[in-house]
Length: 267
Length: 305
Ligand SMILES: Nc1ncnc2c1ncn2[C@@H]1O[C@H](COP(=O)(O)OP(=O)(O)O)[C@@H](O)[C@H]1O
Ligand SMILES: [Mg+2]
Image (cartoon, rainbow over all chains, first blue to last red):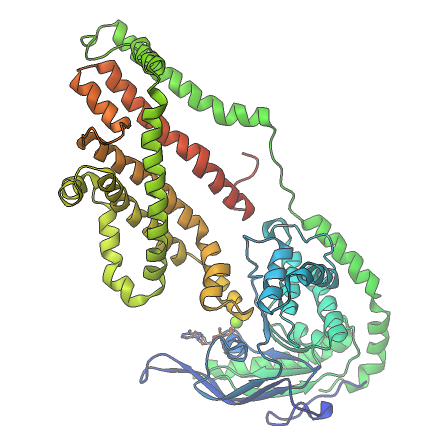
């Protein structure tokens, strides 16, 4: 129950849970561009997410967080190293809701269910159940443009869950929302994570958000992206983003993050 | 540095912070405040704003025409009055040939257009998605769009003779490039985010084309179809004007040419008006409703207008 901290960059994160990790990223490198004129974006990233663990990946803009998440999602291939995800293709949520505007909220979810192989008669009830889970019962027939930003992101969450994967990757999913809506969605994702026993890898550049949500915060350095440091966070859930426990740890992590960024200004 | 010592205090605030139902209530309140409600105007209002302006436009044109006729701007055999043209229409009606003339052309135009859709769509898909194919025939396809399809008529007559096949060939040569190019443009405009989102939920390959790529490209595709219809119709009229044979059904283009041969100017004007009328009617009855529906469903149509 105490706010523990530390562990160095190479400490195994997931020992407490035992068993195979939900996500295993080992010695992953990623470069872009032609040979000769390459930018090395990710450098030797090693990181596990234990089953049922909530990990936030924190780093400055452009440090390679999205790149790493795309690799885990299988949308791109690492230049070196290996990534294993148990239970098949992980679900991925973006900063933009990425819902299909030609389908209703319900049909967006049903498409994911269909592609996951659910037989037709079970799709609608399951879609309704998922909408209920994100507290949007009644939004089944709504068009995407009829929903508010927060509602869209919740439908996107329901669609991600419809894939049936226990591993959920989230790329700054709440960054475009106002503070109050974001606050509500923090509560919702925490609740759903616990209810569904998901393993979550959540990317953000917002330190407080990282501390509010995670059991473990992983700080990435920039250019090239490396795991700089990790913090284990034992504050009880649900936390409040404005509570002093979150604030204190945020100050410490921000200091570290600023240090990382400062290094780049010096040369 | 560590916040260990403050933990007990924290825990209290955290626990007392909020009950789950509070979150639900705040969430529901936000949804209610934020949700967009779409309004649709009444039918009377729609008639006033949509039907009235074009009606006035037509009346103004008729008035100018009648004015020019009454002032004897030119001899009346060159410029008959609106009433003369109306009488020609009545004659055609009493002869019982008005509808068969229109139908012959509309049937050719629409069936040729549908054939063009069946051929142009796969061409568009392949050009848009397969790089070497695009480099090879993409520019040609775009160039073809600016070639007036009348230019194909002489070639088509020599290849196929004066018959229905030749008409369809000219329609296809006019419409297929428009339809294919429309689809290519539609696909190019699909936001990459949709494709990535599709891939993460497992929509790849043909499944991806069916569930993500084609629906996402639909607005551009529809624009191409609309243009394809316009090209089909124009090409057909050109072919009908040029090709004369007793074996061929008599369509609007042929009617127009016959009237010219009789030097019947009110018949010629009637022919032009009918061709224009059919083109506009198909667009209003077929394409506009489909397009509006697609755009409205996606929230791309300005509401309240
Ligand atoms: N497809 C790409 N080609 C070239 N460079 C890329 C590509 N994707 C990302 N990058 C570069 O990699 C770096 C990290 O990008 P990104 O992962 O999006 O950062 P973050 O999500 O942390 O803000 C950036 O400098 C970006 O310019
Ligand atoms: Mg990013």
